Image 1: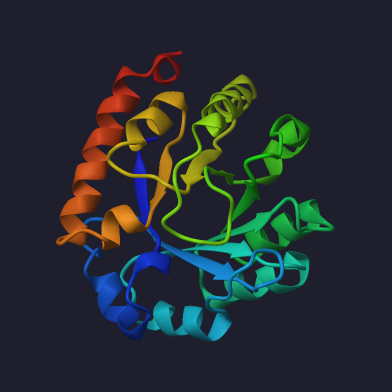
Image 2: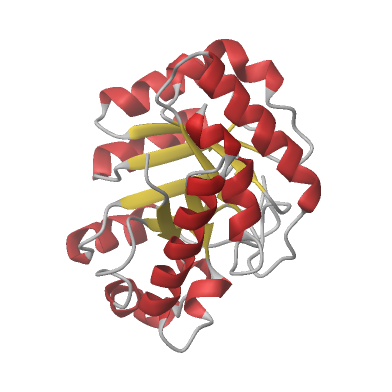
Length: 228
């Protein structure tokens, strides 16, 4: 799969989210929506009403990342509202397989997110239940954090697990993704890249997306895993 860029509106101007999404509409693949509840993570962002409003105006599909408690209860609402990808965190879900299946049944891609300290090996047997594995490359909760290089071996391990089972599972990285780090992520095996500050901190967010995509494509083409 060609690399995909999913800019995070966590770094956008919340007073004009519709306009902020439009700034990247011709360059990005997704709009990454960070949903935080001030319980699972120490921050409070937006919820279903804002997502529903964005769905009415965005030309891009929404990639909803739920960093919340009790995602088993809330995740289906985002899929039913029209989000095309909904990711729950393994650390927060009580019934992940059931919830992932419910997300899929509602018409969205089902994602499973894991924090930096969480091993991916324990999820090998349920990879067939997900459409995307999200590896946090910062501690979840705030934008603008420094990329954690210690997660790169886990990205490589996740790519090996996916390739070894011949699955069509996207591998997303989220946190500190920028021009300085995206090539390392792509080389390690990621193919979907969440970038917040690197996009919305630029003078031209769309051009920033295009530049990140070019870097990811070049690194992916040269990566050993892409030709195995």
